[in-house]
Image (spheres, one colour):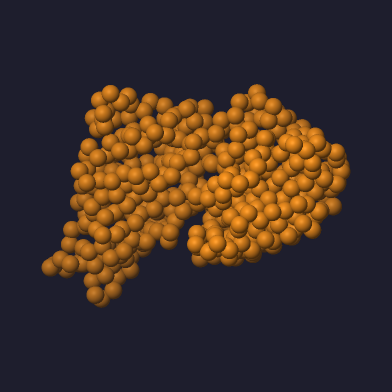
Length: 468
């Protein structure tokens, strides 16, 4: 560890500057249909920048058709994988950022900017850790840093990688928390669509600013045109509700909240839930009211999941496991969409590792027993990750962390989903330290610079131990 500590100290400014350079790429992943940049120009630039840096540091690199890439060193039959991503969730200074989210700024020893903690900062830490090991240690395996560009959306980058490239035999993803993560909940996105109208009003538009499913929405607006014969009702503003009206009987109701990662919906304030409850003060709407009563908008274990009175089939047993060692089932109502007089509600669920995703899906489909024309569809699903705490990988990485921090921590479970679940024998490892604020997907995202340097030292030791 001593040689690694000295290396990191000497490269402190290089690490900070490299993270700053990467943050300037507004690499929000968007599928373009362009074979030269399948996830957009900014993602393409971020990948090329990182691969070029890898070459300058003396490593082998490969760009895999613009979908992803890797940086590699070492020799041997076995491959150690470090799986990170360069795409980020959207950010705008008008969301409440103190400074431009795509220009890093240092305040109170914290490096601010979108991607500093998720996942550009940790990717850079891993890259420099590779350089430290390559220049100072003898290893017997190859080490490969895999760089994705579609992690925040559909993982199509990783799907493309797995079609043609070699799988790691062991590895970690620097995209979560220390000390180490042995279990990640299953992730399930559900769409619920049904006819929708509001008495005496035409629904002109519902806008969520294309909020990502894995983010607690901070904004939603509904624009209505009054079609009644009496005077248009007066909608009152509140702390989280703003009203805009025009002379042609158009009213726009704007609901604001606080964004957070969908794995931690309790850290945010859901603008959609706020809007739905507000609308029910002014409109009698059986559909919305029933969804509220069933707990669809609750952030933990919607009540209807265990209700027998809406049973889809009598032979189906209730979903009984909604909480285990990985935590409780959580729900984030992430997006509303309105088209052809139908309202689509899109929900992102984090499901305990011992609960079958298909059981939860079946339970949501039971909604058809209440609403005749409702459509329930699975938008995406990812099975949970579980690696035995006593395995070599978990025990070794925990030991490295505890020695570096002089602590006696144990591996933990999370609700987030990382690239670790893309491969067998891989777990998430850092960079957020225990008791640090989780800034993933949040306004004023940052990484503490001391944490960034310590994480780099830990990654040095982890790479060496897994590859020696």
